[in-house]
Length: 159
Image (cartoon, rainbow, N blue to C red; front, side, top):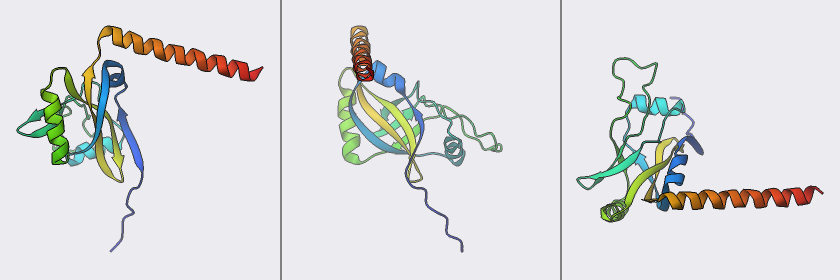
């Protein structure tokens, strides 16, 4: 019998940069996902979009919705639907914490990144609070000020 080498390390498939712009991230969790075989193959090909993704609570379980994993092109008739609801695998304590915070006004659960960790498909989800327009402007201004300061420092060093 031939032994197959186990995958090691972290391979990022998709990131949700928009989440950092639209939400104030309070707490992050790493969750496994219940996936079909064609979904795993499509993810291994590096194809997924988290932009419209969010998580909901149903019957004491956390479900990932709105995440687009395109159909696997080499698959036959038994391919998956791209935007289906996927169950997230978390510890009971993490689920309870997410459910309590989700009930509070203004909180939502958003996916930040999807990746393979030691061969297993994982998603990093965050407990987030929506930013107001002025908060977004404030964040952009702070980033711009930071960039200008870095430029000034590097220009000073080059002289």
